[in-house]
Length: 131
Image (cartoon, rainbow, N blue to C red):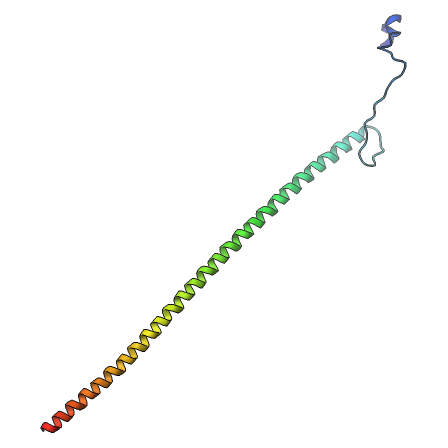
């Protein structure tokens, strides 16, 4: 390339400065290798890190969803337990009412038998006096 330039062009300091600055990319961590694989390895590590972050975010989201689902399930179970307790209380109250009604009916039955026996005794006594 330089051979095609004129002497004035070759001596131009803008095109050919007295020094040359070489920029070398800094390496992450302890990488000390040079060559074509360094960039590929770095790109691979970055890709892996990106995938790990995605995976961690997805795992965190799934964990939160599971916690929320568990909360909901526990709430539903507690609601069902409350409904069951209410139903049991109503059943117990109904059983008490039935028991009270049964006792009342039995007492009334005994009173009626007693009255019937009294009426029969009185009828029998009246018939005996008449006869």
